[in-house]
Image (spheres, rainbow, N blue to C red):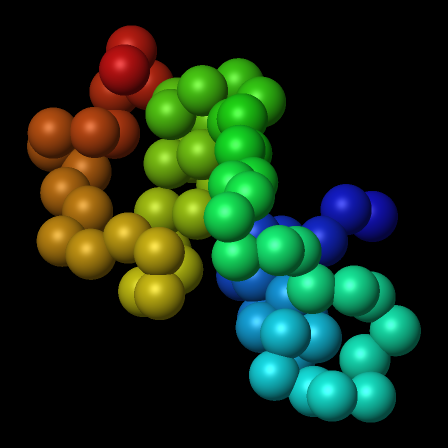
Length: 67
């Protein structure tokens, strides 16, 4: 089962702050680009109840599934 975004983000934070971590840190001058598979529609469908990622989600505005 794939990790949720929040779990992946927390794991990456732990790796970045833990000097004994096995993953190397990215150089400061590089950027990481993450593409949302399914776009915003799938993102909001999957993570609308995650208060760390989404605030003030309103069903009457976003709940139709057409966005």
